[in-house]
Image (tube, rainbow, N blue to C red; front, top):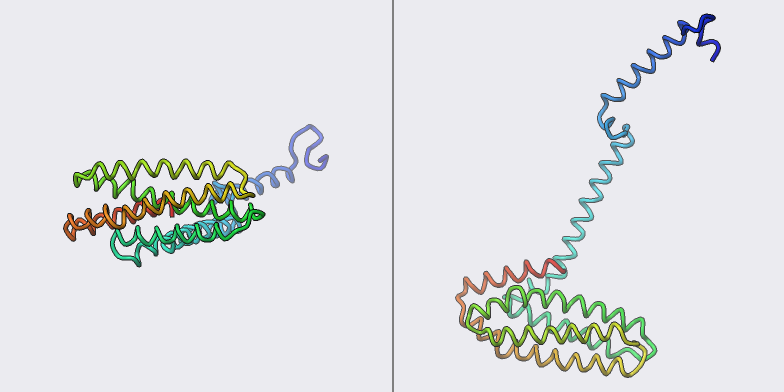
Length: 219
């Protein structure tokens, strides 16, 4: 430090040169790409990698949604797609009912899948199909079916908050299945065929597209 200051307290020639050198270096760094964010060449590479990773994550999520929605896509129009989802739900019930009383973790894991499947299905029906029923002068059917969705949610809440290890839990699950099977039968055999028959091909196609868009929100 003594070498950088003269006898009278003034900076030496060496100190002035060192200061100018640091100033030039700072200006050069400030003018480089990414300097405003504190990135050098390595930081820029990291930024590119982060953007690429985010893009891949978005694509993977979209791909997962498309796989989940594949049931609807492969099943034709809205009524056939909903019937396919009904079968998927009943398949989950089969898996849960095959568990033993000592398999509480497995039961709860399958219940979570069942709840997700029913949430997506309910969103499609409540936001697209039931409003279409009301517009087609079938408000009574729409209200009845929508009301049953409320009971389904109550059952799911109870199952999540009672001990899953024991016969009482599986008995409650079977009550939910009975309710849903009658709900599905009414939709597939009575309400949905009547609605589809009363709409033109163009309107049925529009309803199918709207239902798929709605399902993508929770896929």
